[in-house]
Image 1 (cartoon, rainbow, N blue to C red):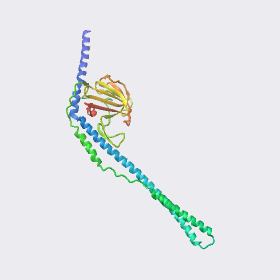
Image 2: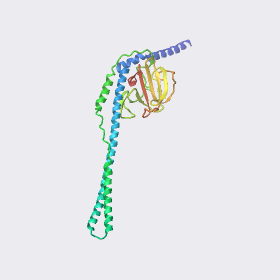
Image 3: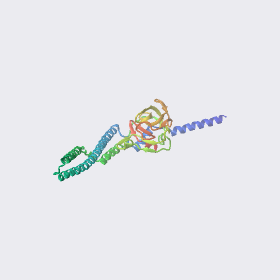
Image 4: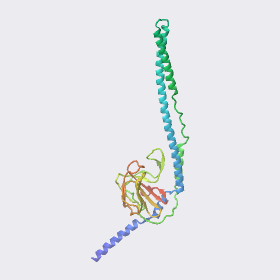
Length: 316
């Protein structure tokens, strides 16, 4: 009996030791992953990049407004030409009828039917006056002048943004405290081993407006509404709430300097201040919030306030 108990105890301790060795990666390990494979821009660099994006987006918006204005001018001008054609057609009919009146008067000027001549003369004058009024109204219809577009080389502007983004991605050492995260080097995605990223981290065409470039601070992972969402690492729930853009979301602090974000959830299953372990269920995926165009999970990861690409970690 004693031998059996010792054997069971040995197996329990052995399994615990394996777990500790396998899942004892720390924030230093996480930092090592990103310093070897990615750049983490400084706050000043990110602010400058954000400024560049804003200026570019403002130019795009202005160009779009000019194009919409010119389209309305084009429509008004086409309508003006249509009215002018209608007016010319009407005037041609009036002139034809007035010429008939003139011919009648000319042929019957010496007849004794003075009343007919007076009637035709009145009709002639009315047709002439009506023709002049129609032409006057048609010619008074004018449209504004088109506005010249912005003289910008759009490809060159996009190249500048991409070049700056590449420039601020040189790896640099970041001082960060130690915290046992769990499994770092073979970390699973928040929805499990099998996943598909539909929108990458970094600059992209805005999926909502489809006309501007935005900086995407995370990745979008395809999943059906109601899919289980798990915490990337051990940590403490900083915030479990909702806003107009992200919808229902959870932010988790994984020691000093590391924060993960899970957005557009249909359900939040944790509370602010709650301690969670790696791969613990924290919510259900959805499509809540205004900044979404379908069901998916928005996952973001921040190191010392700087956004990093979660896909680098997940694809290892």
